[in-house]
Length: 506
Image (tube, rainbow, N blue to C red):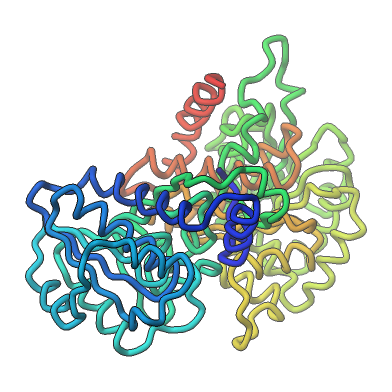
């Protein structure tokens, strides 16, 4: 279930299912039952349940939930933020089927202030289809919900969060758990919306996977479904040379740590050999730290060119503390001149800040088709793709990254708490692994190295980037609180062990 559907795509999936003979009211019954079964796991026999319903199908799901909770003997109150006479379609049917009287919104608001930690709020106000900010009355209600000590379960998506972009439209419910149906939405995994969802539960309510072909998902959740058939285990009869050889370009003598982190990460990710290329003074620094990683001096650009003439060097990282300027531009151009995977990070990107079109031209003319990966954070992205930061644009992070990948002719990894990976053909995925502790010096250098390590082993640019981002985030989860970049490198083998065991079970 790695496909992500926008609200419009989900609406189409519902419509196709209904046109295929599955009644819409049955989908609503199934959705309500799915929410209640999840709620049952956290309800106490004495819990009070407040169900807040809106004017659309999300509210209809809420009516079903309220009836099921009442049938089980819970103390249920249900409120509706619109006139019931305005309800239409399946929502109206669900309301008519409900054997509960509505509680006035004044009394619902008063009840909110009386709830305790063992009580439960059901947010069935608006769901994923909301496209405009909440009005003042609902905004005040959302604030009361958020102030309550009771747990909150959101139906489909916390009200106030855009299902398409994850944007918070003025204010949004902070749910402890969100129950959505068939497939998740981009807004479940894009911030700030992701921070409002709590635990995300995806329930199947009667839609068949076959409708996905007609709906045409355009975004995906980053997981092993994208790259899981690519083994981490080396071949039994293999050797280091068929696991690839990664080159990492070093910075000057007082800025060697970043490239060293990238080199160690590439090695841990499985690259059979790793070589750091550095000016002589920097090479001496590396020699004092590195053992199994090779070091090659390259004082001039001609020396660098000669090193890269070796076709066995099939992956390269340039950018971590490499220095911003003409020399880095020249080295980037040389990296892109052969048939190899290339990760362009940090200074390699900012060296082209004034003329990004020059970088894109180098990529277009390269022999590295499909194996060039750019890894900007938001600040670097803004400077490299200024045209994608129009303040009047409604593009979300997914759409901006897709446009950037097409513009650059390369895979773009737009880093952040909700890292998005896109390639020029339109493949895009949203990553959810990781922790806030990844916001630490050197973390991005490790990521660049992991991606390069996978490129060295023959993965395509998109697959290497997606897998690298996930592994990097999972290593952070294992490392726990207080991690530093070196910890990420140390825990990459733990992640690989998990993947080998998990994928080996299928």
